[in-house]
Length: 128
Image (cartoon, rainbow, N blue to C red; front, top):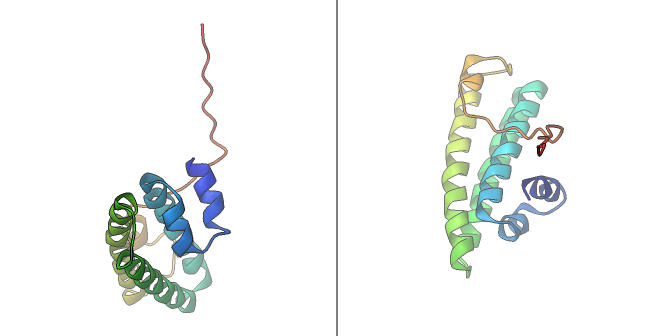
């Protein structure tokens, strides 16, 4: 299910996507994409980092607006947890921008918890 949510994130508006998937998938996949976007922004330079910081803030505002509306209890709990994660992620990103971090190997970045999706990893079970 996480793999499907990863694929769907890339082609679905985030405001819709966050309401279509189970809470664990939303939280996990959102963090996976945040990690990937920070890596990409670091590779592209300070302008990209600032743009992603703004996008990150816009995404938080979008989810806050959704939470203020009518939602199922399950969606509300998921989105409240997502807001907490997104705000922390935004603060980490703002810190990276403030400290002019420009390398994926800078301690300020590698010391952060990051989520990665490695779809090529296959677990093989054998029955004896």
